Image (cartoon, rainbow, N blue to C red; front, top):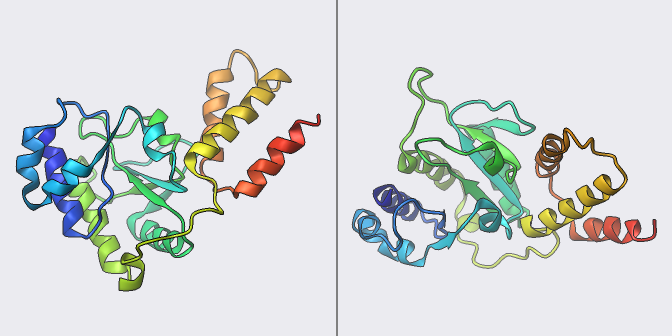
Length: 223
């Protein structure tokens, strides 16, 4: 909904965050309702980047945190909000490019979306009524980050992200690796789809250095 996007942009600006990415908005875009509900954050809506899928939206990021109101039975590390904030700050101080991924109010993030995440953040709510408005969920995490980050970290303008592989590079590496596994019949044909998703879930829960990725790929060419 345009109204949710506008309200989310307002919240993001409240806590001094600027990079706003939108994946496949439901309503026509640009959206007048998003502009009107954003109030003083119209610049964020105008400058937001639109993507057709999550893969493209996170391809330049090093670490992605997905959000959920419930524990998921997938190969991801589930964190409390307090635990997540500590890890986010640690990653920022290590010059990693971080992303926070939020799902739609109706269905949240799908398992396919969560393949792109390294961690899951669980926002504690009433168990009998756990669904949060999108902008409210963003506000909770943005506030915690804003109040926890020191001024020096929050105001960093330029960072060097050359040492860590981005999500795009990691995706390419995983596709290459999975193709190799299929070629040597390592993955069972009947369960191939399930096995591949499990492998991607596990692999994307870690970070990898560019030089390690390149070494593995080059080494395999000699086999």
